[in-house]
Image (cartoon, rainbow, N blue to C red; front, side, top):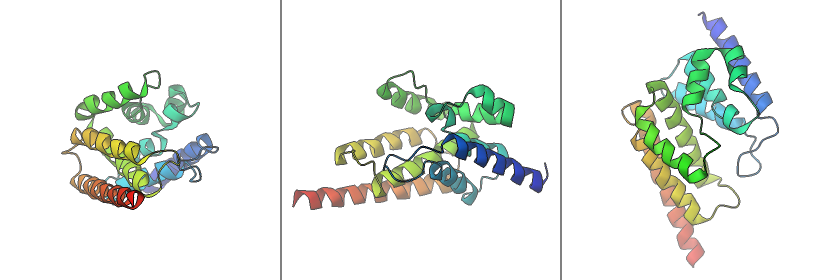
Length: 188
């Protein structure tokens, strides 16, 4: 595939994702949701991942889970390879939240290398957001629990992309420091 075709594909995917997420915001209540998949794809590129199918899946990774997008739509627009990657990182929303979290921990070590890289980038963005611009209604304890759970998921993703793993470790440590500082301030 030529660079021009790859760029056109990525822009087509981005346009599709932006349309699907157009009325959504991150849990902080003000950040447009589309910023998240863009940040995930950007992290992948900045850390050595240049596979167009992977980057496409990064831009689409929450569409089935969080919008009315069907598997068939993704297959028809972007093909089986992209759909397969999206499905590897998509939670089953029919399961209760606790079960979905356990499934992520259990399935992480068995994911494909590309799905692991995508999941790593996703967790980096989420951990950073939980620490810096958290959901408005999340307590300090819930934010700590999220960081601890993310660490367990990422344990099963290690050995995939050293740069992403180091970045995750940095944001996890930084996030814990920020939450500890906030706990101290709140207790005074």
